[in-house]
Length: 192
Length: 103
Image (cartoon, rainbow over the protein chains, first blue to last red):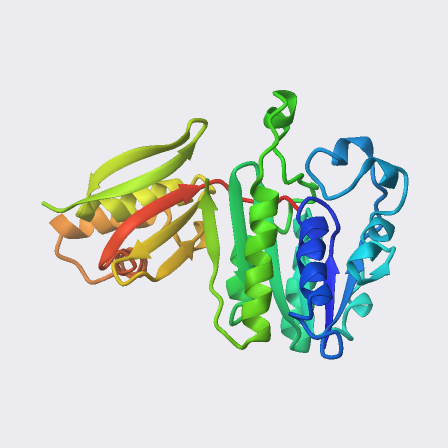
């Protein structure tokens, strides 16, 4: 099974760590599951307080810093459905609805599974693929092309770093484990 | 009359609105029409997540209230309201949040 994590920011960088730890301990079988992470960003100073990177990663591609978790990497931005049609599962950790819409639409069209994992400020939203694109697209604003941090600007201004990106990554990881074990998942949305 | 708690996200975390069960659908619909999301938790533990696309429009509610006092054939708009109200059967609580879009 080929699994693509899209986005290595506040959520994806921790999700990769959680999956990597399970791979290392043999709790996910290397021979059955291949994990690939795709991201085109580099590690910046502003990332260090809430993303899973260290000072020595500064200036390097985020995916390079995440190689230590035994995952394969692609240093690209996801802009085209051709980049992921060969995968079985997409773990969507992106920061904008344009890319989410591409993933939702292509996955429904091609029969690929996905789990959408989001956070913003104190909010967490995690959703497995629904029964139709129409149902899932209720959670997309197709006209909104903004990129959203997992941290709210007002919190950053006050020096308050929220933990919800790590909570979302944890819930998303459990949903992925449920998927591997053929257990059901359902949409989760809450404010802490 | 049965009351229900609607938790609405606020700067403090959330505000609690205690409302009659009968009034809850309209209040939640008003929040959805402000582009919020609402999670309805049923007494059996199941949840349903609603967005603006599930909410009847303001005019649908007006027509629905009219229908109560005027005897007329059911309209499409009142069907929309009734369908929405059905989602609140056996509801335990409702949480209204802003959208999460970050990654």
